[in-house]
Length: 241
Image 1 (cartoon, rainbow, N blue to C red):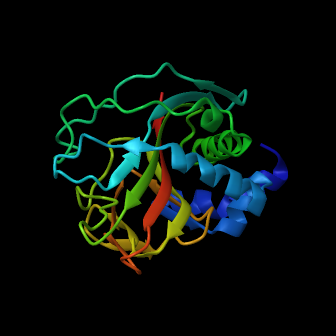
Image 2: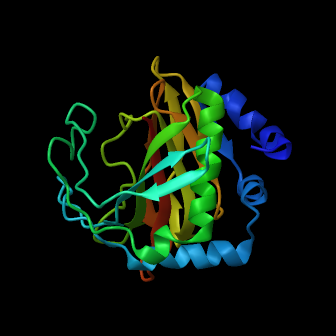
């Protein structure tokens, strides 16, 4: 990590050390990654390839997604795609959808090879290494599209206030189309609200220490019920290896 990057990451490192949550606005992240509007527009297109999540215990058909994993070594900058596998959370972590293997379509090759994604993952890994001291991470990627309409409200976090059973959890805004709502909040274990924000711009990034905080997102509804409406995000979970 060079001196410029170290300095740029300092506010995030401090916030994640105490109290445990940080909002990185899109201009700050774009500067770190060296990307612009054209890069975000190209990245956005991957969300049109997501497929319906058929594992929703609430019966909802509002969530589209894919799933995949990487391993990363920050000491060498090595980032490796892992073989596709089912996703499993314990029911104690996810009482709504946990306790069973969930089989999702894999990430597309175009998505995993996108230079913005690779830069994003390496930058976040460097940040979390600075916070935690761990240099080897397992990374689970969850690109989501939450749709909303007259027939159903979109639920970005249908399990309510929760943690994911990982080390660090992040949520990256990709696009909001014709929706209202979707307010994100981070809480201490005591219940104290540490941070509340509505991710709005492509590149707005919310980061949290999942061991010490919980998070939630309010439902989304269409502004114009006659037009398509969705909220696209990339949730990335880092677990120390």
